[in-house]
Image (cartoon, rainbow, N blue to C red; front, side, top):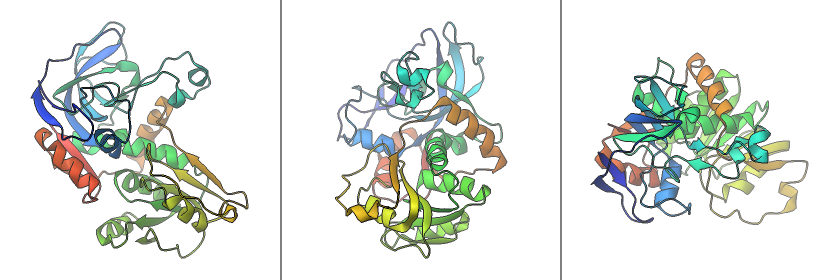
Length: 327
């Protein structure tokens, strides 16, 4: 089968013919229909996230069809359409798994990082960690929901009942979570790279009440802020923008170093927290909610062999919404 393979971080992926994977007990063999390109993929390919298996097939926002089942993979049938997310497997026995925090599992496996992912014609996944995709979504439109949507939803939940919500970095996750926030009658304030009028226009079109440069203070204090951009400098900026008791949620898996800042920015019971991975419960809740909003993905389509170009466009900030590899 054809796949885009990472041999070493910091190098372009190569298009290769590799053996078809086989599924073991509890696993599904899935024919990939679409795989979105996530900023986490970029962190893996660029070597900012270390520890990836090598060689590696990246990609963890996968939509495809079950073509084979291993023993005890009873959650799905052959021919079912499934979504495969970042969280690929957990041990089920550590203190985190037992306490409902499987996103913090001590021995996890991650799709497109420690498990081969969806930049390929076929992939395998553990059936218990796959999701059913609502019928209203096409393959390409559904793919970004598997990470940008899920992590965005988890990040939004961590802001509590915040009504004035700031979103820093208006890319794949932000354009999805903004729709959920508006459905929940929250007021969205969008912050983009300085001068990125296209992203600001997208935010306004999705219901944001204000959009501007990340270096510009909002027109009124925020109740909470989510930072999707992997830029540590935004943390003190967001702290300055939130009110007393406000919360800043760092929604990315990787971020540049956070600079020192005066304690007065954190005082008045402000909090800063991170979001780590997702739980299967997050996915079940989100895929029930998304059709009701309805959440719609803005996508740019690429062919499998164009994965490097999609990654470069993401790296350079040239995407509006999400890139999707369509097989």
